[in-house]
Image 1 (cartoon, one colour):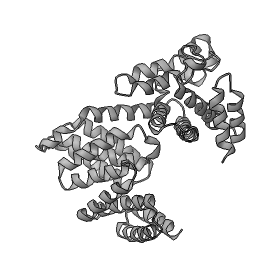
Image 2 (tube, rainbow, N blue to C red):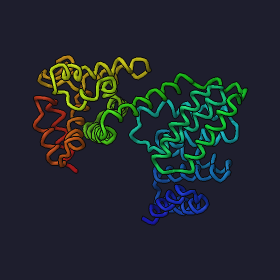
Image 3 (cartoon, rainbow, N blue to C red):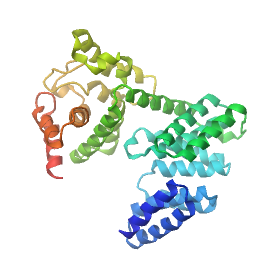
Image 4 (spheres, one colour):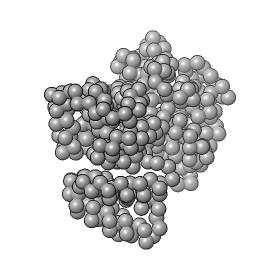
Length: 370
């Protein structure tokens, strides 16, 4: 318990830029974590320690902390990859910076549920530096704007101001190239796609004032349901991915249609095309076909009454049935302001009509076991 308190205090101190005090408390928490042999907590603390050491300019110590954290984590986490990228960028070790930055970009969308806004903001900042050194000023500025937006949402005004100062500097001196061969291994197409998907998420949030909360609830429910059903991690990540972008097609519709699709037969027809619109709009990216299949079918109903194609039962992509159940629950909670018990009842009543009876059974079991 003392370890967690020290760790939480350190996070608060780091947030307010009291880095030395945060470092001391993180080291104290780390000592307790090692005594209890809590490897995952130790790894998290080592990642935090590495971040603080970078901020204090202790690069050798930061490298040791972050590489040790990487060894302890079962799978490389985004924060550690991003911090390693920042570390090597600060030391102008571009070969290593590129390696970790590109790993971070490849993994970010498949497991975005696990990442906080601050972590995404720092990744945007790192990628902005790489793009700038390659002479991709427009890409670099867009990434900095994303970083600044997230820092602002978190009230991290020092980081917000640093991003603003960088943008001002880069606009004034737009041609600072670093002629390092490894920089040209940076996957700029991957970074551009990262920006595209980031824009897609932002655009979806504008379709409804509660959309962000709806998506977060939907994703959290998907993760819990997939875990309860024993869905493999790769498949779970696909459903999470689909849950984040399933409603991208709504951004192409008139606000009146989104607000009330039942206002007319024409409005309903337009609304029912949004899964196909999502597919068409995402096909310019490398979003996997299996994720697109989930998006296409997530409004199909078990009895064939859904849209856009009227598929039924076994014709529906199985993982789309998982997303559909999470979507019904999240909609009841966030948009219809229902209590958990009422939302769960709606899911149960949809079995055999809107939802797969097997998925609903797993859903009910999930909450009965909590």
